Image (cartoon, rainbow, N blue to C red; front, side, top):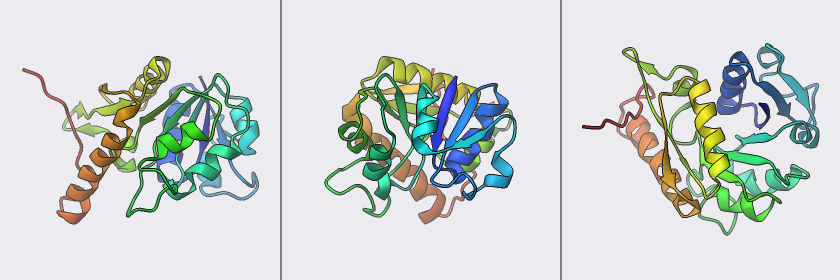
Length: 205
């Protein structure tokens, strides 16, 4: 796949390297191709840097991994998103999010041309994206959204990043639930003192 990643911080940078290693073509969308976070370590395995609109134009799939407060501005900066799949990995943290929205995915839907928006890669830490293995077993991810093809692509990319499964949580009405799930992980890892090296695994009997 051709994947545009907007946001080269911990999440975007980690997934860029994972997906490039899995054989995908990763196009980083940045404001300044000569100066962006992680430049030296990210331009490997064929990963390239472009303007945001250029990266989007070259890709079928877009990962948004910027601070949630910038969700509307980032969505509006993408250019033509008709026919594109957008994967939203953002969470509103401490009420710092797009004004007037309870979650970032609805803000993206309202400010782009595509209806294929799903929320995924938001319910665990970037450390687990870098290494999802616990005692020989990979942890799971979760995805929500009305877009069937968006969910299929997100699940494929989750497995390409090393996760075991990517479970379908429901439609667009579950976007806020996904952000609450992220807060559950954050609460355990930070406020309850368990640390970041924890992850979720769905078990069946």
